[in-house]
Image 1 (tube, rainbow, N blue to C red):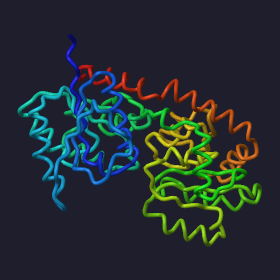
Image 2: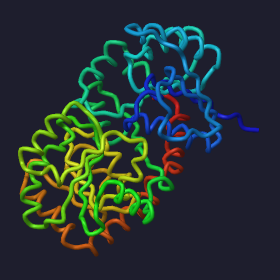
Image 3: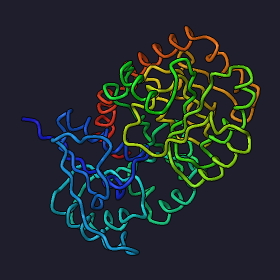
Image 4: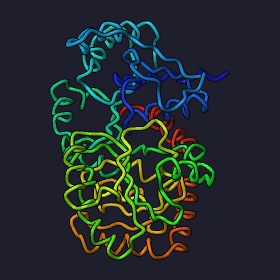
Length: 370
C-alpha cells in the first residue's frame, strides 16, 4: 500500500481572517485531503469560524498566543508539532508569524521538504520578500508561486525559479442561483431591472474601488439603472463613502461590508468590476466567473492569467474611457453578459477547479529539490 504524503500548512491567520490567502489555505487543504494526502493545518487559535467548511479529513492544530508576543509565543508549539508529526512537506506563506523560526529549529531534529508558496507580488509586499531573505528561506526552501507574474518576481528577487501552482475556486459554492439572486437583491433593496456593478475586495487604494466610484456619474448618465455594490472592508471605506456623498451617489452605491457569504453577493451582481493593481492573481475574478457573471478587470499583474477574453474585458485601470466603454458594452447588452457569464463558468470548470489544481500541487510537492 502506498504511503500517504503528509503535508502541513503553517499559516498563523487561517482561522482569524477571511482574505484570499486564507481561502487558498482552506480550499487547497480540502482538495489535497480528497486526493488522499494527509493534511494538517498549523495555526493560531481561532477568533472566528472559517468561511470555508473544512473536510473532516483535514486535521487542524490550533495553538494559543499571547498579545503583543504572538509570533514568539506560537513558535515553540509549531516546533514541537513539526518534530512530533514527521511531515513530508511543510508549506509556509510568510516568515514573520513564527514560521521562519519554527522551521529552522524543527529542521535540526526532523527532515522535511520546506515549500515556500508566494501568493503576492513584490510590488505589493516588498517587506515580505525582504523577510524571506533575512531568514535565508529563498535558499532553504523549494519555491512556488500563485501565478507566472509572481514567479517572475521571485526569480528576479532571488535568482531561483518558482513552480506555478494557480489558485482555484469552488464551483459548487460559487454558481448561478436564481433564487439566491432574488433573495439577496430584495434584502439589499435592489430591483430586478437594476444593472448591478459589483466589487469584492478589501477597501485599500490598490484595489481600485475609488476608480469605479469616480466613473459612476458618467456611467449613470448613460444608463440610470446602474447601481454599484461594494463588498469588503478596509481603511479607505470612510473616504470612499465621503466621495460617494460628494458626487451625489448615495442612492447608487451600497457598501455591504465584510461577509462570510460572498456567493450571495456574486449572484446579486451583473458585472464584476475589478481594477486592482499589483494583484498576484485575482481570485475574485474566478469566483465571479464561476458564479456566471462577466468581468471587467485591470490588464495587469496576475489578473491577465485568469480572465479569458471569452469571459470578460481587460482594461488599462488608468484609462477612464476604456473602462467606461467596457462596462457599458456589458450594461447595454444583456445577451453578451449571459454569453460571457456562461463562458466564464465553463472556463473555471475546465481549468480552475480545485480538484485539478490539487493534482498540480501534489506533483510539485513530490518533486525533488533542484
